[in-house]
Image (cartoon, rainbow, N blue to C red; front, side, top):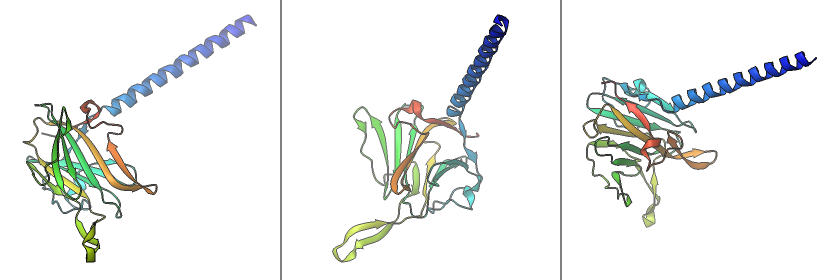
Length: 217
């Protein structure tokens, strides 16, 4: 009987060790996936910034799925990095794109809503965005769609269902790998307006929480 109990304990110990090993391997896999570099698809066709990234030149883009039927599409050619944020037909789809300058260490934010602008993180926080001062980038903003009360010229309305697009000159940031964070807001999810970040849980002031994106050349 004593021998049988010792054998059972030994078997239980081995099984526990196996479970711990499996858990450890799973954790390694999760960490590796979380830190993987995203390959940006190359394209031979420059993106048309028309507010739509459907069955056209964006088909070749690398696609990242977000909740609420939203998605991010990225691609590049020899001159530009292209990104499109796509959501539902009743969404406004606002884009905030963050890129770290590997040479200067500065963090840049490109905001596309009813206007476009770029700001830089300083010791005092994010600098004031300079609307329509498009230094090395262009995009498709949320279009103006008239007034709620035209008689009193109040209550501006903005179009829903267009996609937010941006192109950035590759000369603006050095290297073939860019450290990036992406925020998509103006999206309806479970009856409320929501914002989704990629990578999930990233912080706009901490580039170590962002994701590496690599060009193919």
